Image 1 (cartoon, one colour):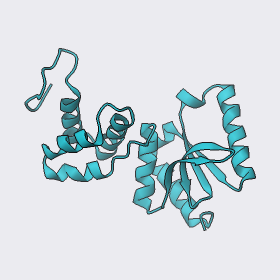
Image 2 (cartoon, rainbow, N blue to C red):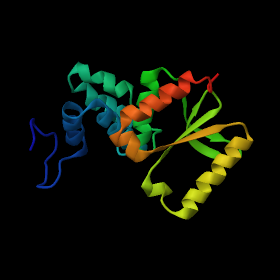
Image 3 (cartoon, rainbow, N blue to C red):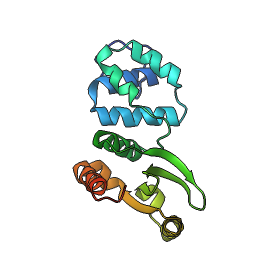
Length: 174
């Protein structure tokens, strides 16, 4: 079902990317829109320039969403956590390469690593063992690690946000 004119012909099963994004932006909650647009950029389905052009054709009130998009996010859960950290006013770095550890999802205050773990990439023992060894390597270098579960980020965001706020207040980040 479409609520507006399409910019490209649709099939019975699908509409074009631009039309899908237009509908997404006007019909879904902001965090879902931002996470999806992050993925569109990350996967190279659209350039930042193309996305800006598309947003110019939308009502101006949606422009704030575009300012929050970041194609460095490698998953929707990373997008959600980034938005939480931003809302809490916690400064962070995204996709940071740490010597002896590898790339981490978020680095806060130069000492706290936050990883967003999902079943897709952390379900078998070999993946779990790799994560434990990475965390041990990080601890040797003075980093603490918090691993957030995708299911909590998606279905219990208030609990995850409360955890992040508690950690920020705890003094760990000073």
